[in-house]
Image (cartoon, rainbow, N blue to C red):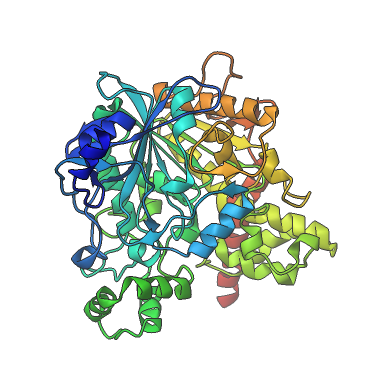
Length: 557
């Protein structure tokens, strides 16, 4: 019977025959059409997670929609197959494969495509139930040039915390952030994709058992910065109700550029385009094939991956929005790992052989990552003096460099952001993650403690997932225990706006005492994260700059 049924069903693209899908997985109806998903098991839980993959939340951003804001998706007839991972947005697959290898994940590498505006949904609810689970929308990191939904599995978090997890994609690199600063290519297309995904959630998540009035956005690195940016945009007003920014906020200077046009012209020039006008630049880029765009993206090395004030997503400079407290005032959690520049990023940006030791001359060029447009190059010397001192010991300089880069790029922006929200009367929770997954610790030099992105393993309960990717080693009990604790904190925050709950070490709200939670083998409250270093960089350095300026002015008289 089933074979006969299949023989008369015409499958086109993602569309399959409805009775066949119902027999093998969950089915849900959305505003745009029906989806046939699949069930996922989670280690340690009886709950079967209803999973829907490759769900379109916008029209494919191809043809005339390249370098343009996203548009609402087109509906479909029949049942759409939602059991396969989508292609990731255009990026370097070799870089992605190396990343997966470095974090001990075995998985089939996804294809890349410009047609990539899809999301995945993981829900503990049956579609027929009138459930009202909180929704957690994950925005992936990757420096705005890499990443995708297939690198994450929301099933464990959904099962253990009774939340609906949505993982979204957005355009990356040139296709996501190319800007001519005018109507031809305003920029921030990747951020507008995120807004489109959040609008889709508001329109459709009730069909998956989610509560559209209880949406938490969370993300890490560039995903954390994206969360922080969504808090600044008038376009995202009312689309979410809580926010978690992990190891990344809108205060990271390296992600933004006040004058992107010269960088855009440089990208266009290496692409063989006429750069005499912005119109000609965009017309030329629109004619490039997908393969050519990927090649240009690889050659440009991030030149086209900056956030700008585009007049739509961002209507004012970021500093002005923060200073005037003109951000969405929702409960906010942010934090960092204890060694943000320990391995993942230092291996990419550090001088050759840095693990064995380095010297000041070798690491000074990397300070441009912290502040691409310093008001005075002398500032970098002041900061280097604080962290590197006068020692000529290469290992001591290496350790100082690792701390300096992590503090300046991630820790201090997180503290600054927390301070702005606290001063605006917003409930804020700050953390420092201190325990790496053992499976990663074994692969790294002994000098590495808790690195950038280590927290993701615990937030997503990766030791409990049983889906499309596998780990090369088993997780020990200590990692499983910590993962349950971290998922509880994050799940509680999604449910109530506070991470606190039963059987958890109380997490003090971030206030005048600057309390934060140290998360590791044991949890404990501490105060004034990186207090001395933060005071030096934000106050002492500024005082020295003012004194130097006054001295210059006095000398000119």
